[in-house]
Length: 281
Image (cartoon, rainbow, N blue to C red; front, side):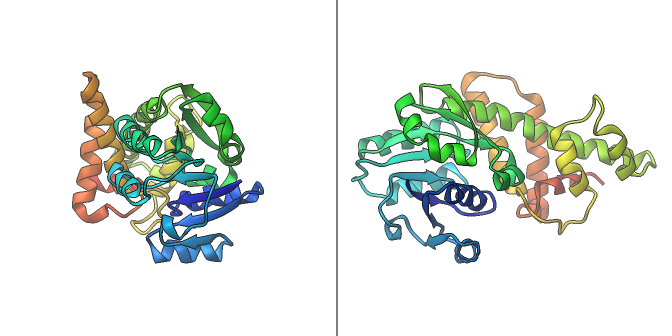
């Protein structure tokens, strides 16, 4: 299939490369000249706008925020007949429904398919994809989705996948902050946090986030960024908004959100999300 992949950053690029590796023709789109340069060095054609990309059967949107998704839809015009858009960004149910309706009005089919698994699983094609929408539309892009990971059909309505991703990001947000607090506690108790991490991560107190983020928490501020503090400010805000819309009580999420915001206010917004540990002294 001919695929336009919009947003070839830290997680988007390995996703796009997995699609290319499965035999599809892929063109990346990114406003960042650095992202385009890295993509091209990785063997992926990349351009600076949707208009500059060749005609495609499938358009994958992997932008960072609801506002960016809205701006993207503003820019694509009204003649999208024959295209299937796959919104893989974490933007929340409301945004995907609103922008999905606009894309459908322009003639496109739309699949809501946010992902979880981070850059490590993106690089190995092992993401979990929460796909929702018309089953025929999902089937039409299944070969593209399968190249990136395991597809879980979540419901018939646009926004069902985003709603599940909201629950997922609630847990991710809380688990990262819990891991940071626990390792900070170990340090305050006079223990070696690295030794404590090795002892507890495989037991009942372990979590995927503890094992993945924990080692990076024990490194310095300049640790390689796989997901930034700003991303979790955005994602935990999305969770809070979704919870408010349905009257759900999420006190632990509120605590985690405050920690990410504190880290961003301390100038750590573009640093790896593991640096939330620096909000403990």
